[in-house]
Length: 127
Image 1 (cartoon, rainbow, N blue to C red):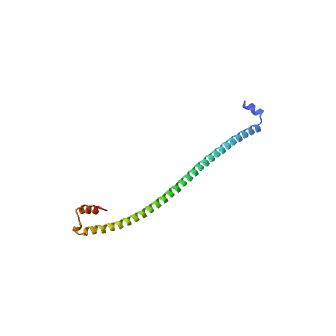
Image 2: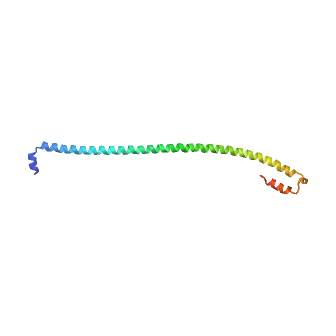
Image 3: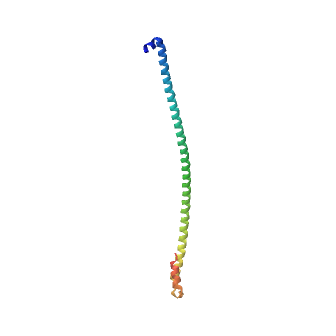
């Protein structure tokens, strides 16, 4: 059968047919490769968009945390200033109490009355 086909169809037709078949195969390979590259490029573009969105979200979160840190530092600074002020006020009161305690201790015994020992204990128990 092959010899009959060779006699009926010239060799150049067979060569052209094989060339056309090879050209179709190359075309199919080129198109599928091109489609795969386009699909890969689209996938990468989508991944880039996702990464950029995540980056923006994390940057916003970082800025928020930095603002909270600034507020916390400001609160800590104010708390330290209030603590220093409170310590100064307590030191001033302590000096006043020391003076009062000293006067009570130095008071003569005849100034004490029947209630005085209880009062003295209460006053000495004061901070």
